Amino acid sequence: MQLQVLNSPFNQEQAELLNRILPTLTESQKVWLSGFLAAAQFSSVTGEGNGQVAELSSANTAPTISKDVTILFGSQTGNAQGLAKKAAKKLEADGFQVTVLAMSDFKPNNLKKVENLLIVASTHGEGTPPDNALSFHEFLHGKRAPKLDHLRFSILALGDSSYEFFCQTGKDFDKRLEELGGLRLYPRFDCDLDYDEPAAEWLAGVLSNLKEGDGGSKVPLQEQVTQIVESTYSRSNPFRAEVLENINLNGRGSNKETHHLELSLEGSGLTFEPGDSLGIYPENDHALVTLLLEEMNWDPEQLVTVNKKGESLPLKDALISHFEITTLTKPLIEKAARLSANQNLQELLSPGNEEKLKTYIDGRDLLDLSRDFTPWIGSAQEFVDILRKMPSRLYSISSSLAANPDEVHLTIGAVRYEAHGRERKGVCSIQAAERLQPGDTVPVYIQHNDNFKLPMNPDAPIIMVGPGTGTAPFRSFMQEREEIGAEGKSWFFFGDQHFVTDFLYQTEWQKWLQNGVLTKMDVAFSRDMAEKVYVQHRMLEHSKELYEWLEEGAHLYICGDEKNMAHDVHNTLIEIIEKEGSLSREKAVEYLAEMQQQKRYQRDVY
Ligand SMILES: Cc1cc2nc3c(=O)[nH]c(=O)nc-3n(C[C@H](O)[C@H](O)[C@H](O)COP(=O)(O)OP(=O)(O)OC[C@H]3O[C@@H](n4cnc5c(N)ncnc54)[C@H](O)[C@@H]3O)c2cc1C
Ligand SMILES: NC(=O)c1ccc[n+]([C@@H]2O[C@H](COP(=O)([O-])OP(=O)(O)OC[C@H]3O[C@@H](n4cnc5c(N)ncnc54)[C@H](OP(=O)(O)O)[C@@H]3O)[C@@H](O)[C@H]2O)c1
Ligand SMILES: Cc1cc2nc3c(=O)[nH]c(=O)nc-3n(C[C@H](O)[C@H](O)[C@H](O)COP(=O)(O)O)c2cc1C
Image (cartoon, rainbow, N blue to C red):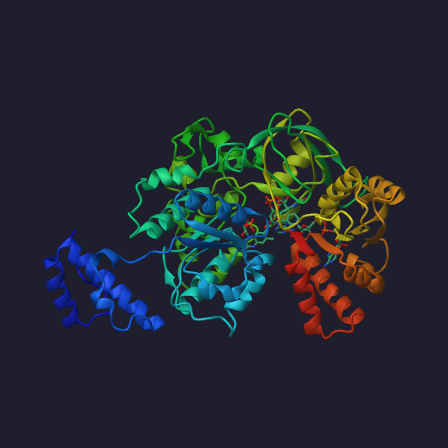
């Protein structure tokens, strides 16, 4: 290969000199030179060497690439964690010494000692880091962040392109590490919900760059990519679980519809612990698919290719089970614009119209797009090619395997709303509410979640805050504690709209209260009285006792709505700690952060 100094930090004269001398060098001269420069840089940084570097023999001068790699993950629901662990296995198999840790378990000051850093981080909230990445993120962006000139890093960012701040946390880390002097070992990859392939590609790239100067990779890139794709039942190879039971838990006249779904895991070998979730790959509403086919004048039986392996299916089946058609994203609209001759669509994408585009996307789906921007000039296959793969939906598991072997139970709230003059239905929750019958099967996988687990010590007290469907994992907790005969105290805060129709699993909770598996329960039915009462109001009413439980080492869990409830409960907790612990607000925030660090404050929110 002809070496050429092009876009370099050298001035023109230096670059010309280098370009003249480089082609004349033998291989061993090049190795000597690179070792000489690396060693000279090392001595200038550490003050070692005493000017002896020029005398080092060429055998010793090849740059030493550290085989130590630190992988830090920030993960709320386990995706980034799973990928970080897979990456660690792969690197270890290739001879690297790997430390893999949640960001919350890593002492940020140790960054100074890390040479190769890989970060796998998802984004939550409205572009905010997951809980276990918060303190590391804050540290890096604060004044105490160290200079990281010695660091080589690469970021794998997980997100969902339907969110405004796509992969924001990964982007933040990438930018900040560079600002602190780190050298990007491999470019950041921003992954959408279908992250397996890009994640594997990122890892293969990282690996081959890590190996540079280390004899090089002997494994072709494509082989490395395929090696880390899983083979047993998993997210990428789901198990078809049979529906055993499907019951609406809400009484007649309720505004809500919450389905208790029981699925069989028999023969799958799948196992889970309380706190884990189940992923379901749902099907689109058949009626919506029919409307879309009619609107686009497409033949439902026409065969289309649905994946890179070249598998094909009739268009109608492909739209029902393979692709997302209910969410619009900016990248999708940009690609769709190439298949439309409608000027308004080009206009919507032009600079300055970002707000207009956001407003358009909000609450609209592919059927809206197909109606709004005719004429379409792309083929059905071209359309299919731009769609995102159907993303799975996660559900907090509401049963314990010890109590219900070979089964998994879910508590699914039906999502229905109106937008832009049309009834909209949540894909998965409405499949569960309207179509899934005992005997049907659905593709599922287990999403382990180390960030939402019962205390190791069964005697430790637990406080559970779970309004609405947030009750799900706590049913699992209670079943498990009953099964193992745990002695620890437990306290449940539940809330929903009406006592009569919406007290989910009422009789089970009452049974656990009676038999002592549950020590205390406080309920907040928000629409039974003139004034709204929420779980956090009940917590405030019992603030003294709640604080005493915390002081005794209780673990506190929140599950359910992320947007409002989880924030309000979090703030209420700070208020309680501040008041009952006679602490400043700052100290109360620290108290809760410390609980989080000790894994005594965990959230499963969505
Ligand atoms: C870790 C985790 C655990 C979860 N556990 C549970 C659980 O135990 N039970 C449960 O019911 N859900 C749970 N969820 C939520 C669940 O994964 C799905 O998001 C939910 O069921 C909706 O999926 P869907 O396919 O029915 O709706 P989708 O087709 O995905 O539609 C939902 C989307 O519709 C839009 N939308 C919803 N309401 C409105 C509105 N009023 N106006 C405008 N737009 C709106 C929003 O963009 C929303 O994201 C959990 C989520 C996570 C991440
Ligand atoms: N990301 C997603 O795709 C997705 C999908 C489905 C559901 N969700 C969220 O998940 C939540 C769960 O739905 P759900 O039907 O189980 O229950 P929910 O809507 O959260 O309602 C449960 C109870 O919580 C109350 N509540 C409302 N705001 C609250 C607040 N700020 N603090 C404390 N309590 C509050 C409700 O009262 P009122 O109703 O009387 O106000 C109700 O009594 C939904 O709120 C929704 O936001 C998200
Ligand atoms: C409540 C919630 C909020 C989210 N917010 C964002 C967001 O702002 N930006 C984004 O790119 N992805 C967002 N996501 C998508 C997640 O980053 C994505 O699902 C990711 O794969 C989760 O990885 P984890 O399991 O490691 O946390 C959000 C997901 C949830 C459940």
